[in-house]
Image (spheres, rainbow, N blue to C red):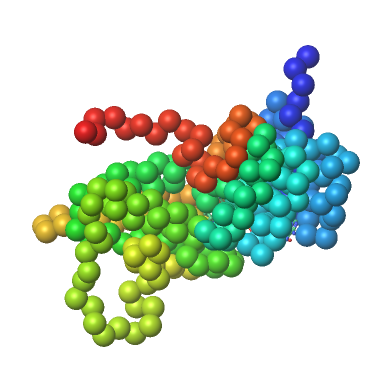
Length: 256
Ligand SMILES: NC(=O)c1ccc[n+]([C@@H]2O[C@H](COP(=O)([O-])OP(=O)(O)OC[C@H]3O[C@@H](n4cnc5c(N)ncnc54)[C@H](O)[C@@H]3O)[C@@H](O)[C@H]2O)c1
Ligand SMILES: O=C(O)C1=N[C@H](C(=O)O)CCC1
């Protein structure tokens, strides 16, 4: 009989955590050994024998959770937002002392969203202007979304690598926030609206044309194939991986 992979969930009673508990419970190769909420001690992960831990908590808790996991040699699949460059650098330094441990920080587990961000980064160097609009449910605590921040970073680095600087516009006089937040120079606009789940548009414009790359998650079921892929793959990817694209072959081909 094949051994099941022992998996635990942090934030198990939240919107994403409860969906992940269901998906892991239904996966024939995974064994859900712990499902923790905010008042449960992390030490119980050790006694439960978790090999992979999924963190779907809150931005204030995720970095210290992951620090504990790496300290105890557990692989981490993290969907929680709030991973600043400083936090990522601290985590990388910690992982250097634990070279067999894998951590995936995935701002978005929906495969369509990962593809949309990759397409946007590919397109970004061919257009003069680029802006991001992200739209989410109003119970979301952070803005802009982790997905929008990651997309902006991918766009900015693709443009920098191609030697295409972000074009300034003529705005001189603006009400605070009217042109959005700047993430690596890319304007990001956040909408919070009852009825929405998770949505994003990347608008790309050049003289006489516009390309819109839009992704919609209508249901948190959309994130589960990516969560399961992360759980099954993380041990095979020691060190830090940011973005589920790190586990996918996103070669589009045809680019010289
Ligand atoms: N990567 C993705 O695809 C994806 C998709 C949706 C949401 N998210 C992110 O996941 C996070 C959770 O989103 P949500 O909508 O499920 O939020 P939520 O508020 O519904 O759930 C968070 C849960 O974490 C619990 N919690 C808080 N601190 C904890 C701790 N220290 N240990 C264990 N549990 C703790 C809370 O009690 C709550 O039940 C957010 O950062 C969100 O942006 C990511
Ligand atoms: O519902 C949320 O909260 C989401 N958070 C992630 C983000 O901030 O990008 C992913 C989409 C849903």
